[in-house]
Amino acid sequence: MSRCDVQEERAMAEATQIFLLPISTSDSTMSPASPKAQQSSQLSDKLMAEKQQEEAEWENINMLLMKHGLKPLCLVKRKDLKEFIIFDKQSSQRMRQNLKTLVEETARQQSMIQELIETNQQLKNELQLEQSRAAHQEQRANDLEQIMESVKSKVGELEDESLNRVCQQQNKIKDLEKEQKTLQVPSYIFS
Image (cartoon, rainbow, N blue to C red; front, side):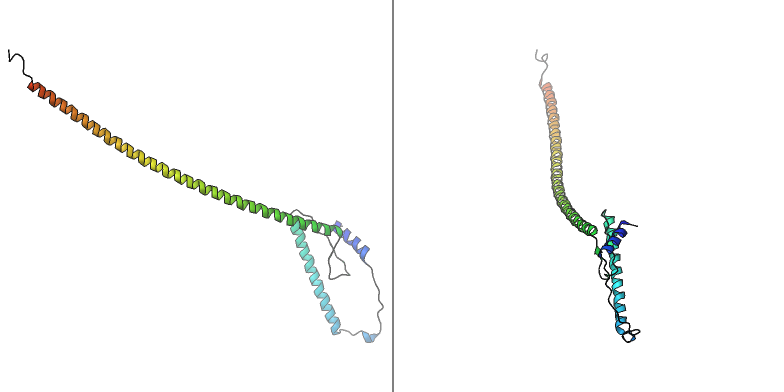
């Protein structure tokens, strides 16, 4: 026998009181199937179905509670109170604690989610800033590369000009030397 069953029997023994009321036994008051009796029977069936549905819902809640690592609630089923499900003190206390824990856990998770959203936004902003910096650095590197290519081109042009001048000067020197040679008269001719 489970702990819940023992608690249920104990609660029933402590709380159950039977009241016997006299009933008339004359045949005139007992009709075989009066409309009131049928309505009463239908109402009783309806109440029983609702009670069973509620008990099934509590069982589902217990499964959810256990799934989340919480203790299940024990239901005390009393036959003389068809419209009620009564919790023993321990289950009632567990229910309050469980609900409190669920609410606190939900609040904690919401807070954590909010922090994650804020951190995510901050990381997105930092990433965007870094991407902007990287794009700026890349543009700067491209600009420097273009400047370097321009400088190399200019240096090449200057080297070519310099070589051309040197060649021209060497050609002038050669021409001048030839001219000087032609202008020099040998000294034996004048003697």
